[in-house]
Each structure stands twice: as C-alpha cells, then as structure tokens.
Image (cartoon, rainbow, N blue to C red; front, side, top):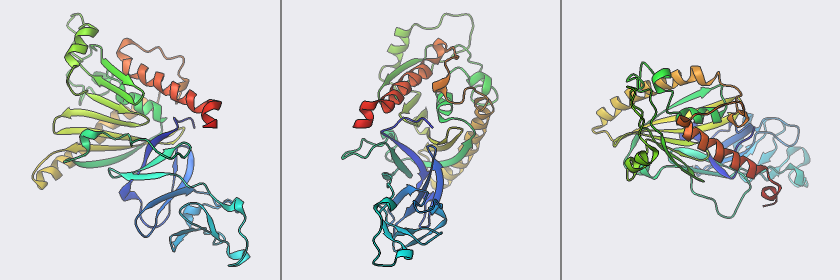
Length: 332
C-alpha cells in the first residue's frame, strides 16, 4: 500500500504487547513484535527467511525470537544467532539476517519508523498540550476503509449536521463559514465556525483569520496520522490512525480529560468512550462507501470551499508520496 514514508506511525498500544510474540499487519506488511526481558519492544518482519514460516507463532528464548518451524533463533537486531540443523558451531549464512524495524515507546503507544534508518529521527507526531496532567480512556475500532479516507472524515467540517444529526450535529448548523485553515509540512489546523443558515452572508476569510488569531484550533492534525479535537479546556479527543493495509484502518481513539476525583474521572471516561464509539459508528456507515478507497486516487472528486482542510491534506499527502517515490529519495 502507498503510505507516506520517513514518518512515525503509532501501531500498537503499549499494553497490547507483552513478552510473547505478537503478529500483526501494519502498513501492508506482516510484522512480529515482542519484548526482551528488560521490557524493550522490538519488531521484525513476520517471516522466517528459511522457509517462510510466521515467526509470531514461535517463542522467546533468552531474549531471542525462535521460529516455530525449525527452531532458528534471531536476536532483537534481526541477526540470526542459531540454526539447530547446522549445529552450535555451524556457519550461519548472511542471508538469514532480518531487517529490524525502528521503534519508540511513548505516550502509551508503540511508534514505528517507516522509512530508511537514520542517525537522528524527528520528534514523534504527538501533541504537546497532552503531555502532562491528562487522564485518558482509549477505545479501539477497526474499519474496512483506507486510512486516507478515515483521516479526511475527521477533517470534514460540513458532514456534521447530516451524518451526526442525532448527536454532535443536532444543532443543524449547515452553513460552513470558511473554515479557517492553516497548514505547513507538519500538519493542519482547522477553526470550525459552522452556523445555522438564515440567508446571511458567511464571514469573509480575513474576518475568520482575525477571529482565530491567538485561539486554539478546533481540530489539529499532524502528519502522518494523528489528530486532536479541542472540545473544551479540560476535554479533548485524540486519534491515532493506524494503516493496517490498503483496505483496513485501526482507530485508537482517546478521550483525554482532567477530571477529579478518581470516581468522577472513571465515570466520565466510561461515558465518553460510549459516546465516541456511537459517533464513530455514524461516520463508518458513510466512509466505507467512498470510492476509490485511497483518496490519492480520487481525481473524480469535486471538493468545495468548505473542504479546505481536506484539500490541504491531499496537497501535502501528494507531495510526501511523490517525494517518497522519487529516485533522489531512494538514494538518500
């Protein structure tokens, strides 16, 4: 599948990975994750180079991943350390090595670097405003949809009174003013000012920009696949979009809040998780019908001015995909 490279992707919740091997599909590839005795997470391709067995069906022995087929052992760096069939002193072929993937663990997620290894890596695409003092509750939802359509759905400001007419769009605010959008190479920020249509003229872009100055965006998106919704000063929603393959996306959706005491926080988290699941299900029934699945192929789409955030996403996404496909990039 086509995904933007030289980026960090959140691929698992930290709590999903324990000591034994875990095989999952991410970004169109079968991968195996496990932890060494010190708790460090590691990842390799989920295919033994010997005869193609899934390494995720194996075990961990002395911090090595052991293939279930012939007992071949790999260390965390992908080096083959033992092949029982050739004996302890046998010469291990260089072709038995695997390319280890680069991981970071932070904010309750495992982040996978998708791109060529480098001496220094960029910061993780998380949001500084969530760094300290926030509680959160997470739901996991899988959709049969391409990750680009899932992301665009959360940047779409015009669908609320139609898709969510019984929930967050119940006010009937069908007139889209703007929206005011700011974008750069790292992401997109959107100030949503929808209102009821009484025949009035929408505010001018300059007026929307002036109103947005010094205020927090309603929606923030960071490439390649994280999103933040500013609901209230003490309540925000965060999503990590996880590309599984060309036809499936996983949502890790967090309700982030500052609620005290603990019992209030627990009740609030439970209620918001139920609400988020309902609202996301309303989106799902529409988004899974969009064609073509990958919005990078959607040349027949006719975006409107209200789709400014989506237009910016497609422009930046196209630039990053083109850069990843260029011969100069391959040579880096």
